[in-house]
Structure formats: structure tokens, C-alpha cells
Image (cartoon, rainbow, N blue to C red; front, side, top):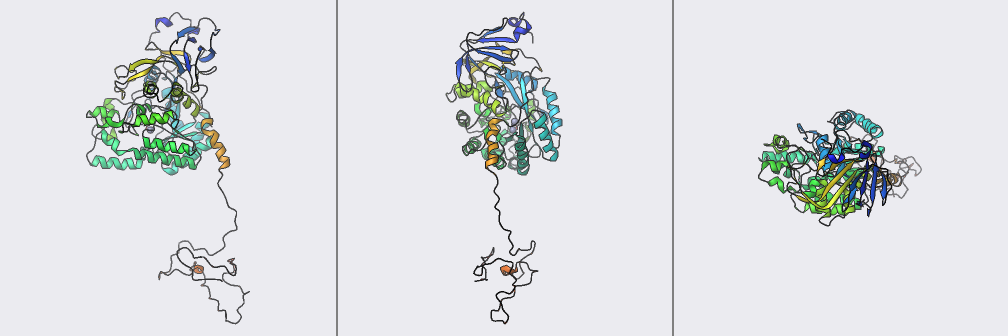
Length: 572
Ligand code: URQ
Ligand code: ZN
Ligand code: ZN
């Protein structure tokens, strides 16, 4: 891509000196007018009448908003999946991201079952580092569990700058973990100060439903939706919440797609549990009615898991929860496949690669459906598209805020301009756009990544590999400040008591054939039967040793009925 004329003849250093003038800065906590001076990728000054070194490139932001660049918490660029590879790679995906006002993505390293997590981490870094056009990080998936995995998770936490790990309750036999594995993995994550992310759908039920639907001849994309109705997502969401709470591990539910799953998170948060919910652009901007479209390609293009919900009030409901902080932030789950890739499932919906677009359009879609609809104000928009991600994943205030010392990841935003979304004009490689023809208010005019203009005047100025891997330290305060205190105040209880020294049933013995339960004292059939005390027999002595001497009965103590029946004995 040639450098456009207005950047030609500008000394190299000047390109790293930017002065944004006349804009209204919007952070998650406040809006204010201020100029911004940037040098070598960092915000150096913020205010009015700045005194700056010469040669800075001046950007006129009059009438525009100046916001922290978007942070997309959930992408799968060039992901090997379901027999193919997602078509938007780390170059096309991050190029499209900056064109849409996003300046950082958090992608995923997803080991196959039984693959070393460290090996997979190196593999994914090798794919991403040479291609990314903006800064990025990665969640690492735990797709199997063993002592080796436990050790590798600890190594990744301590040495690779990763503090977030994804677990799937779906994709049976591919990525899915069972409850015991989830419990052990979350215990390990908690011990290391990392965050547990879950894809919450019940993969066992989905598997059975898919077989049933295919047997009924329902092979189209509508089968995908019907194999995993809302309650399949809600049940897994609630289960993940319970398991995480049992081990006091902070939980982050990705791609919250339904009202009922969102309600589980909302209730859990009201109960004080440390749970975060991430709706995505797709679920906020469109719905699952598309699965019933007569055009197979159109319907298949919307196949993702959990599916978009056919209840057309879902997007507005999720946006209301986002406005209210019942849900905290947004990603896209961008995992794109072309028509011919999707067609691998033309006769069997279970073979349709799951995933949709979003990385380029998230910011405009959320502005249109959130701010332009009056549900979000601009500060909340910044919170849910940038700031909360930086806080939850622990790289705030390096990113997610316009302030001195923070990275110069900035988007200059025109709230009144509109743009029509289309596959014909988007910068992604995928040949479909689930937001096709949507007109959005809110347009990124200029995107600045690490202090460099990468999008301006509808032109990209990106460099492959210019993006950096952002390491994230453990124990993010947003997730762990409460958790660590709970460790102290919610200790398990142990009651000190004298040992039980009464009769003990001999494990593995069966009641006598006659079905009559032996008297409670004869619980051990090998033990000598108790001799009934003949109070008139000579030599009887209250002080004599008796079979029950070891039982500390008060003389007047009545033996309570043993389990299963009334006692015929009384010592009174
Ligand atoms: O499950 C995910 O998040 C990945 C595999 C993307 N695909 C999808 O359908 N959500
Ligand atoms: Zn998922
Ligand atoms: Zn995903």
C-alpha cells in the first residue's frame, strides 16, 4: 500500500508525533474537550493549548469524538476448525479491525486434545506475530486435562503473559471438558490467579439432538438452531457458574447469545458471584430468524454456536443488560468461512463450519443499536467496547483509556455519520456479512494504532507484523480483588468431635436372607449376637462387663432407631 501524499515528505519522526486537536475525549468515566499529543506510540500530553515539539502531524478532530480504540475480546483468526481454516487470517482480520475502529484483539490458541498447550502456544504465536496489523493477545484453551496440562497452564501463566483460559462445555469429543475436568481446571486457574472463560452449551445434549434431527431428515441450518435451543445454553451457563463458584474462581462467559443465559449471569452477579458476561456483535445486531431463510447459503452463513436466537427481542434485551452492567463488555467471536467452506455441510448441518463475522463492524453496530437507540451513552459505549476488556484482562490503563502514559490506541469517531455495511465494501476476506445492508450511525474516521495512523479517509495504512503481543499479568484486580478476600473469609468448616465408637456396619455385608433386619447391635453379622440380659439370673451385676460397654450410653439412654427401622431395644 503506497503512503498517501499527505503523509509523504513528512519526516519519519514526525509521523510518530501526532497532535489531535479540537476533539471531545470520551473515556468510560467522563467526556471532556482536550487536545492530545502523541509521541512514539504513547499519549504524552492531554489538555488545551499544549506546547509540543515541532513537526507533529496535526489531525483536526473538531466535531468528532476521540475514544480509546476498541478491544475485541473474542476472535478466531485463521483458526483450524471442522476440517478447514477460518478465511480471515491475522492480516485480514486485524486490517478489518482497524478499519472499524478496533485497535486490539484477543484471539485464541486452541490445542487439539492431547496436544501440548505450550507447543500450541508457540504455533499460534508463529501464525500471528508476522501478520497482525494491531496489538493482540491470546486466550489459551484447555481442551483436555492431565497433570501435564496442569503444569503447562502454570508455565503459561508465569512465563507467557497469558491470564485467561478458555474451556468448552460443547464440541463433544473435540474440545469439550466434563464437570470434573472443569472443576480441576478452574481450581488450577484460581491457584494461578487466572480467569476461566467458558463456551457454555451442553455438548452431550447437542450431540443427541443432532442425531435425532438428522434421523428426521432435518439436515439444513435450521437443524443447527433446533439442536441447541436456549435452555441448552442456559443450563451450561448455570453449571459453569456453579462449578466456578465452588472453587472460588472468577468466571467469564463468552458469546452470551440468549436471554435465559444472560439472566443466569445477571442473577449470579446479584448474588455476589464473580462472573462476567460477553455478548457479541452478532447477538446484539441480528437474530436467529435467518436460519429459516430459504437461501441455504444465507442460512448457513449465520451458523455459529451458541446460535443466534430466533426471538427478535433478544438483541435489544442483551443491549439493555449491557447498558445496565448485568453484562460487561463485547467481543465478536469472529470466525469466518466462505460459502464453499460452509457448503461442506450442505447435506448435514453438523458439518457446517461454525462461525460468523464481526471484527470490522462491532463498533458501528453497537453504536447504532446501543448509543443511537438511547440505551448506551458514549461513556458506556467506551466501557463495553474497550475499557472493561482492559480491566478484566489486566492491561488497564495501558489500554482502554485516553490518558497520559497510555498507549496511543485511539479512534476518532463521527457519531452523526452513517455507513452501510456490505460484503462488497468490507475489508474482511469472507464473502458474506451477517449485517449486510445495515445502516449504522457512528463511523470511525481515523484509527491510530500504537501512535501510527492506520486508517484515515477510508484508506488503510497498515503494516503486517507491526502489531505487538500484549502480555497480561495474573490476578487482575477486576476479577481477583474479591476472590482473594473470599478465600480468607469462606474457609470450609471442620467440627472437632470425639470419634464415633459405636457399632459399625461391615461394608459389603447384606442383611440376612429372612429380610428381617438384625437388631441394631448385631450390625456386624460376624460379631457375637448380644446375650439378652436376664435381670433375675444369679450373678447379674450392673457393674459386669457387657457387649455394649464400649458404647457410651447413659443408663437411661434410648438407642435411637437405626437407619431403616424402629429399634426394639431400650437401655432405660
Ligand atoms: O465456539 C467458538 O467460539 C468458535 C469455535 C467459533 N465458532 C462459533 O460458532 N462460535
Ligand atoms: Zn465458543
Ligand atoms: Zn469463540
